[in-house]
Amino acid sequence: MYDLIVKDALLVLTEGTFHTDIAVDKGSVAALLTPGSTAPARRIIDARHHKVLPGLIDAHMHVQAPFQGITGRLSFYQQSLCAAFGGVTTLFDFTNTRRQQSVLQALHERREEMAECAVDYAVHGKFIEASARHCAEIPALIRAGCPTFKLFMTYSREGVMANDATLVRIFTLARQHPILPMVHAESDALVEHFYQHKVAAGQLTWRDFAEHKPKLCESEAFQRAVSLATGLGSPLLIVHTTHGECLDIAARAQRRGFPIYVETCPHYLTRFDDLYQDPANGHLAICSPPLRRPEDAAALWQGIQQRVISVTGSDDCAFSREEKERQLQRDARGNLIQDFRLVVNGVAGMETRLPILLTEGVAAGRITLNQLVAITSTNVARLMGCYPRKGTLLPGSDADMVILDDSEHWTLRQQDLHNGCDYSLYEGFQATGRVIATLLRGETIVHRGQFLGNHGQGQYLHRSLDTAIIRHFYPFA
Image 1 (cartoon, one colour):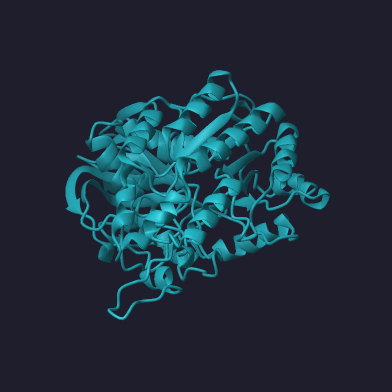
Image 2 (cartoon, rainbow, N blue to C red):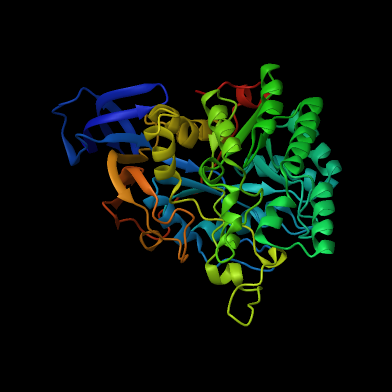
């Protein structure tokens, strides 16, 4: 007898869509049965008229990460609720590595902090420096199931930038070990140049924030990172990519077989720099890199269609309005005095990633539902070293599922989200497609807007990378 059968499902995988009954036993997919099977089960879920997707994976978020003098109030448990309601069954965060700190120690600290998650979780190591001591930790990090490492090419003022020498050392080690470096590609030298120019001119509006981080800052760092990686024989994932010039750089390397992978985020696909014109609310959209223009989003959609972009992440870094405004002043009329230097960077996106991509991607005809599964689950699992346990619903995989009504129309309201913020960049968004239920290893944790899971239900995900993906470019579906 099976523990669960999800009956009459339209199972959506990257390989195709299949009418099947999904049998689950001991938290894993046990079999894909002929629809209408009479196999016995302790529980039955009727999925008739609904699509069933593998649980989403969000490999890019920031929780309890001190930045620009502020640490957001959002806890890992709260974030895991956002994940569950958004169909995300596995989430990743980064170590809070401090300068001269052991990355291995930072990994253990982060694992303890994330143990309260109600969904499964994994950790990326963050490298600020690459001393002999730090580099010697890489084999132990791999053994601990942490083979992916983040490096920031900017934020020298915040003390987390990895300089080019650090990139070279980590990229050289990636040729020798099964690891995947990930970079935030913005040129610190250019950002600082434009920053000082804006400050000297007293140009500190929300719009000036975007102008001090123009596309050149991103494309210069993107090209430099790709040149270093290809020259040193390292795989590379460049996160939160915002425009087509970067995709052109990546595509050239990919065509030559270099394992250069690209991520983008829903806010760069659907929200634009006109938001910075709003004096009362433009600061709420401040994130790095900044929002771009509609033509840049169009290039990103094309990059997904052409498989230059392999994955999406939310880059969720949620701050309340109070946290965004904490260091700002108001004039005599109570209006905010615009000073982008005093606004913490980051926007929320964990819970809204699926409805945004369903609406602006699938319903708008830009991508298929199978492609959505690829860029939100399967490709992420493959790249991050957790496939086929995650990212699919084939026999042997974890029974992480999203039961979806892809035709339901509804209005997205911040009051219905679970991140504790009091605003959303998507307030009033008319969405098509809604999560009916989310299952984690066969257990229903969300059903029709009700959370049924438990604090600490998530498990740490021990990962190891597929050498076929990190040694040569893999053209994901």
